[in-house]
Image (cartoon, rainbow, N blue to C red):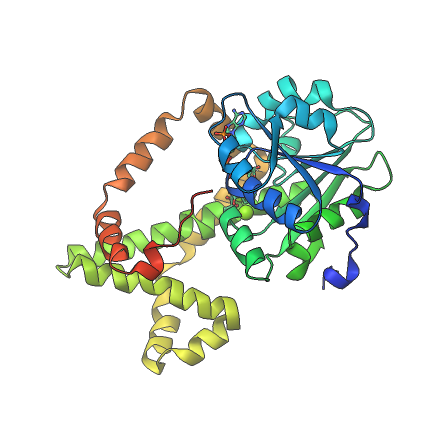
Length: 335
Ligand SMILES: NC(=O)C1=CN([C@@H]2O[C@H](COP(=O)(O)OP(=O)(O)OC[C@H]3O[C@@H](n4cnc5c(N)ncnc54)[C@H](OP(=O)(O)O)[C@@H]3O)[C@@H](O)[C@H]2O)C=CC1
Ligand SMILES: CC[C@](O)(C(C)=O)C(=O)O
Ligand SMILES: [Mg+2]
Ligand SMILES: [Mg+2]
């Protein structure tokens, strides 16, 4: 069993009298900035010139500076802009202001692991990666709960990097749920695998195929949506709270029997092989190279896939149905 760190094991004191610069104010960054601020840590948000996020961060009671100025005045610099843009921002705005003894921090190991950012030897480098979306990191913190997180030290120039990483994890609320130590390699590869094969790619493909199968067979799209998407959350909630056993306790025996008989046929050897191939592509750096090339070309494939999916009957019917359920549609994801 891995060593888990909780609130009672971790002190915030390594962050006392230090300033944390949060670079960006998107999904993760707004949650880190607001959670740290409410945990009593001194925070400055670093944003590019003309950023539309300045007002949002200020409205949340946060101080905003340019990226360069935020890096200059901070002891700990957390880089939370999209992975594909980090190397350029690092080279232009961060590296020239990154003096000895500061800490350069990441929410995901992509740029260090794939060699796109090479920091100087005299700074601490670590990651603190919450295991969940930024908007949920903020939501659970406000509710008094936390999101599990993992941390890794890549470079310990000051001798304090590990304690600083744990204190940071506490400041954003992760030690309320449990934090464990990893490496940049393990975090990067497992995170990419999880989001591609299971959490995002795998899950949406499963739902989409289920929806299309029912609709093609002549069933009403609204029923198909409720059956394979809306109810997914309710089943996942049970798995999240009680594991497979608790979920199977709550469903009917009919459903449980069908689950054992049909599940392994739907997600079978072919899918397992595709998962292994996806992992190999991640480990070899092939996925990272392909994603960076897509970025440099202006995201032609991403744009096409996004547009096509936005028009898919699943999304069209889903938007209408969610609109009739104010307890869902009123939950904003806007920062
Ligand atoms: N999304 C998530 O929940 C998770 C993300 N992570 C990691 O966290 C990091 C941030 O991801 P995420 O929160 O999704 O990022 P977002 O896409 O939400 O980041 C948006 C922010 O980045 C700024 N930004 C975008 N492009 C640039 C640029 N070229 N130069 C300067 N600023 C820029 C935007 O600035 P402006 O406001 O000016 O538009 C905005 O403030 C990544 O490393 C990611 O892998 C880790 C765990 C989960
Ligand atoms: C699952 C996607 C994720 O890895 C995350 C929210 O943890 C991401 O990169 O956004
Ligand atoms: Mg990720
Ligand atoms: Mg993740």
